[in-house]
Image (cartoon, rainbow, N blue to C red):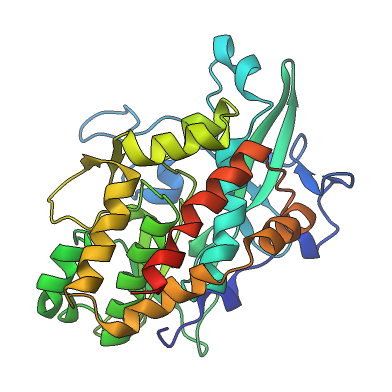
Amino acid sequence: MGSIKVKDYLINLTKYDDIDRNYDTNQIILDKYIERIHADKLHCRKPYYPGTKEPKRPYKNYILKSPYSTYLVREREISNSPEIKHNVNNPTKVNTEAIFGKVYNDCGINSVEASVGYQNTYWGKLYYSITQDLKTLKGYNKQKLVYSSPNFFLHLMDMLENKDEYLKEMTASCFDDLINSVILAILSGETDMHSTNTILLKEFGQNKFTDICRVGIDERAYDDLVFKNASLQEIKDHFENQCEIYSNSCSSSNGRITITPRMQIEGIKSLLKNGLLDEKYKDVINQIANYNIDQCIADQKHEAGANLTNSHIDAIKYYLSQSEELAKI
């Protein structure tokens, strides 16, 4: 890990009583707290296209304000009116983010940790993922943090072959964190690890980034299967045979590529067998191989309101179990 422990600055919503929650599920009730804001107020200094008053992005972001911090509230299911009634009862991505924020942190990769919230709508409960806005992080050693999205390809081969280029912008430990985060993303079936979901951090006055923080970790290769409550056998068949689009991969590529989840694992296996992946990077593989995911799921149900279906649990456990074979190499 780098010198900055981002998790130390993130505030757990479950610690506070100022926001209503459903105490049967520990999910936050957003009916009177959620505030819709223009996305550009969070992400862009110039909210309009040049010479126009046309917004660059629609009103898609929400915030939750507490006396302690500001939180991003993101709708994680399809919610167009004709479809909302078919989606509100299976908040797959919301629960994924609540689980893997903790998994990543437990394995030494800084990540925002999500809580589950919902609004009561005409069709039923509409679920949201609630995470702290990184812009509200307090100073490290009484200094503010600088953070940005890296303009790097997040593919293992690209990164290993071009390490010197990365080290011009970051410390060696930060580079190791970045490598470990890609490995962890692959082992967990994450498909959307890209530059804007991988934040680099450094202190003001420092020339190089010293740490990372993962955000937007809700998408997995098995999402559609879990949404349909697929069986374990269907999940296994999909893992072996169904191509998925990945933003991160073992293979060298300048963009998204389409491969099977099995090919992702085989890519890491090949790197290990050919000595192309340093022994120190096996630590994160060993951590996942020995990780108590059952305890994590139980904890997050209590702490963050994550309530997973059996299909979802089967998918998570099957994907993470692939690390056991890699740990033996």
